[in-house]
Every structure is written in C-alpha cells, then in structure tokens.
Amino acid sequence: MFEKLNQLLPLGNFIRNKSIQNFLFLAFIQSSNVLISIISMPLLIQSIGVDQFGLVNLSLSVIVILNILVGFGYNLNAPREVAINQQNKEALSHIVSNIFSAKFLLAGFASLVIMVGVFGLGLFSEYRIILVYSLLLLFSEATLPLWFFQGMEKMKLVSIANVFSKLLFLLGIVLFIHSPGQSKWVNFMLGFLGLGINLFLLIYIHIFLEIKLYKPEFSAIWKSLRSNVLLFFSNLGSHIAVNGGLIVLSFFSTAETLGMYSLAERVIMVMRIVPALIVQAIFPNAAKLYATDLPGFLAFSTKVLMISITVCAVLSIGTYLGAEIIIEILSRRSLPQSVRVLKILAFVPLLASANIFNIILFLINDQKQLLFTTSWLMCGYMLMVSVFAANYYGEIGLAIALLSTEMVVFFISCFFNWKYNRVLMNELFSTYR
Image (tube, rainbow, N blue to C red; front, top):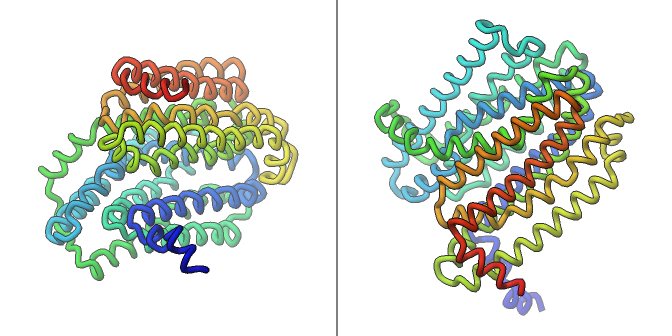
C-alpha cells in the first residue's frame, strides 16, 4: 500500500530536490526567527519595561536599515555566483573572500557613520548607548554566510546554526537581562552570539569545504559594488517604507508610546513575511513557466495569487478580531494603545499579498529599474504621509499612513505593469472572464 502511495506521490524525490530543500530551510530559518522573536517579546517587556523595550526596538530598526547597506544586494546575486562555480574551488575562494571583505568594510563604514552621528552630531540622544552597543549586529550580518550555503545548496548546517544562536539569545535574556538598566545588552548579546556562530561557520567553510581566504581584491570589490547599486537602493527604499515607521514615530512620541507601537508593529511585520516568502518560493517556477508555457504561467500565477490573498485575509481578519488577546498574551497586561494600532495594521499582510503578481512580473522580466522606481516612490510617499500623520495623530496616524502605503504601492505597481507589461496584464485579466 505504501509503495503504491509513493508511486502516486513520490515524496522522497520531492524532498531530495535541491531547490525544494533550499526553500524549506529558508522557510525554517524565517519561521524560527519569527517564533523566537515572539517568545522574546514578553520576556523583554517583563525584564526591561515597555519604554526600554521600545528603545531597544528603535535601535534595532536603525541597525536593520544599516544592514541593508552591509548586504548591498549580495544576498540576492551572490547565491547565483556561488551556484555557477560550485565545482571550482579556486573561483569560489575568490568570490567568498571578496564578498566577505566587501561586507566587512561596509559594516565598518556603517559603524563609523553611527559613531559620528552619536558622538559628533549628538544624534539618537535618548537611546545612543543602546544603539552603540547594537553595532555588533552589523558585523554579525557581514559574516553571515547564508548566501554561500544557498548557492552551494547545503542549507542544513546554516539553518541549525541560526536556530542555535537564537536559542542562546533566549537563554541569555532569561539569565542576564533582569532590569531596565540592562537594556543596552539585549542587541549586543544578539549580535555577539550571531557573530560567534558565523565565525564557526566560516571555519567550517575553510577547513571542510576547502575554501581559501585570500586578501581582498579591491578592484573586484569595487566592480561588484557598482553592479549592485540598483539592488541596494531598491532594497533600501522598500525596507524604509515597510519598517521605518518606528523611527519616524520616535521624533514625535515618548519611549512608552514607542514600546506600545513597537509591540503591535512587530506582530504585523512577522505576518508580512508571508507574501515575501510566497514570492521567493514561486519565482523559480514562475520564471520557468513564463519562458516555456505562457498559459501555464498565467494559470499558475492566478492560482497562487488567489491562495495568497485567501491565506493573508484569514491572517488579517484573525488578527483584527483577536488583537486584544494577542497583545495581552505577548505583554501579559492590557495595553489599549497597542490593541488599537494592531487592529489598524492587521490588514497590511492582506494588502501586501495583492501585490504579489506585480512583483513577479517585474522579476521575471528582469526590470530592476521598475523595482527601484516603485520602491522609492513607495518610500517617498510613506515618509511624507507618516511624518504628517505621526506629528498630528501619533501612533494611530502612523498606523493609518503605513496601511495607506501598501495600497499606494499596489496602484503604482499596477500602473507600471500596465504601461510596460500590458500584454501580460491583459492576458491575466482575460483568465477571469
């Protein structure tokens, strides 16, 4: 009986597929990060208080934006370079050496910018100590070899290492973080543990995979930086538009308000990963179908879009209806402000899912310029509206501004696709007739 089932549904072959394994391990990394982030929230709020929790998250938001600089698009194109040269250890050695060198230099530059801002210009005054202690996260990002293991199609080790470092972080919170005065160590500990695990992975790459580490070739590094500029700015614009709300709010609100807003925002940012993961998962198959079977591509894309919208609608409606329970579970207290913000932001994942087909069209047509333009129009709108809304209406105004940003980027993307990919858009609409 089991043999017949295996013939009908060859699960073993499915699991052994390298691309499927890559996706499963990436999903495992994301889901474990999300789970540990959710578990850490009530622990931190109890230990350091809502106001310090808000400042820790504000510092983390600044660092995450700078991590876009450290990544500089390498996380998108480096796996391809590694995959092409899987059997060429000499070429791999030069690729690995140059990319790690470039990212380390970018981490040093980003750290210098923060240090000048903190001690030279007097910026980030309310949370400057926490921010300075958070700089180790930049070097943790610089040494993260996820892109290498993606290209090598050997994701198991880096997945286990990622989970192990996050579990150590949780243990560190329980053992060492007990008062508001210790809030500066939260992000420091996250960065220290991540950096330590990454160094062990680099040793593994060097010894067991026989990848040599050469001196940086600055001409090759400069060439790669120039080729990645558009990817970097596209990622930066999108990230600011999606995650920059907390930084905007910091100019107009108290630390306690930041903490309450941050709690609701983190819940939503966890769910907003779903549309991004769907794009990442379906893109290879969508690109293949687009090249060989246009009707199949349209049918596949339509099906994925409908399923994505349905899943995200369930998530959004469930979050709206259960907002009070969610906040009380995470904070172990009643926080009406967080509940109100969460109810507004609850529909962000649903609106983001509606844009999946637009993004897929940009990607399969290699329209980097359209991605760049869309992301920065989205960013410009978000900054303009959120500054006004946060100034006059506080965290509620900001939540509405972020919700409207998702709607605006959907219409912008539709406009560009209608202008540059009209044939495909017409074909898609004809499938609904």
